[in-house]
Length: 462
Ligand SMILES: Nc1nc2c(c(=O)[nH]1)N(C=O)[C@@H](CNc1ccc(C(=O)N[C@@H](CCC(=O)O)C(=O)O)cc1)CN2
Ligand SMILES: Nc1nc2c(ncn2[C@@H]2O[C@H](COP(=O)(O)OP(=O)(O)OP(=O)(O)O)[C@@H](O)[C@H]2O)c(=O)[nH]1
Image 1 (cartoon, rainbow, N blue to C red):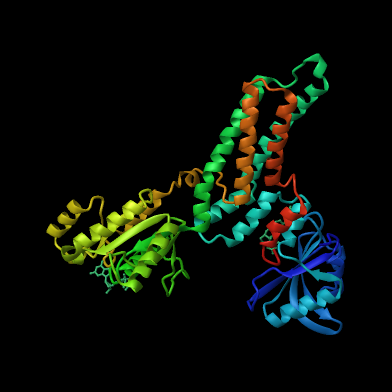
Image 2: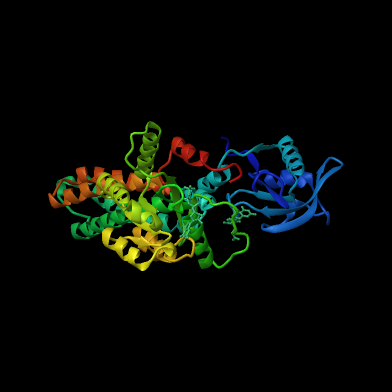
């Protein structure tokens, strides 16, 4: 990966569209573009100011490939910090390819995955966690994951870490200075202040580490297993949940869906519904395989919905209760919502009966929508969205989580060292290690392998 090359890639999605953007970045981006672009006003691209847009044609010799708009961004004022040229062409795949090929023949090379953002990082435009947030932002598909990625990209998380890192670095220097004056037995680093800082750092680290549970759930969606026999109304329920959410987001054009997807966004959080069969007692081999699958799916889920039809309650109540007991015994800690569906079909006596026989039952009619809103509230209450509402930093990245855990471990050692009056040189080692972990998050410490791993997961052109 040569940093001096001028790289090129399609910035928009592959395939035909109204307009496509091809982006170049590198020292020679503007000079290469100026040779292949003919401005309608005969302007020389190399003499234009940064952040200017120019209309003209991309020319392969005498052949006009397309009428385009070219945007200029001059080093260091661009996304990557290098010279950047963007060509907005007509979105035909043929035109896109012709322009790409033309530029490749004229001194550009194809960008690797994430290479634009890698360069932005290497040129100090973004720190590492901000660069990682760019990828999260692109893949965000609901309000919550979007909010977290946006906050991280703007630097909320990294500035928090960077600030702690700096304060800790100050103390590390003072303590290391003390080591140089070991004979004189001086203390440059005020131990009370240092203890305060260490307390503060562990507090922040613990909060960030705790936020990962929420962050993970938000990023990946919450798997919900729906256990229920055929025909109890699972699809109708999913539809009803979808409609409820549509009502909340008030009919935004283009959000209608033809098919029910497994993932439904409720209150900005993705819920992945996993359809399963019932778990009745059986000697039938085929059925018992199905039941084993149901348990496997419950295993993967974070929430279980047990759905049955009120209509069938009269005759089947004992079967339901046995199934429920089985789930509760096997997964005592897993949140379970028991839903009696089709309550529009039964009378009040039966409703009262059901409520008496099965505690905490959720009455619902997927068909009429009765009880659906309460169900969405119940689902949202199961996860702690407080941090999200309060705009606190939430971490979603396993790499950050690992580094924070290790940093906390080191900080605890430092704390212990302070308590037991351990010598400065030993403390300095733990502080350095904590600093190293902070540096891994912000990118103050990197290596090729780390960068390779991170940016390889980006798309080409980003
Ligand atoms: N056409 C286009 N749209 C895009 C991008 C892009 O590169 N091109 N982006 C990227 O993927 C995002 C926007 N991010 C950007 C961030 C910084 C700069 C930029 O020119 N920064 C300069 C100048 C700032 C200024 O105006 O003062 C700088 O930071 O110095 C451009 C885009 C999303 N939309
Ligand atoms: N009256 C009434 N009918 C309902 C209700 N919910 C679902 N139904 C009806 O019950 C039938 C089965 O509903 P589905 O949603 O297809 O049931 P399912 O559990 O997805 O069925 P499988 O795909 O076989 O697992 C349909 O005719 C629905 O219209 C309800 O709350 N009240």
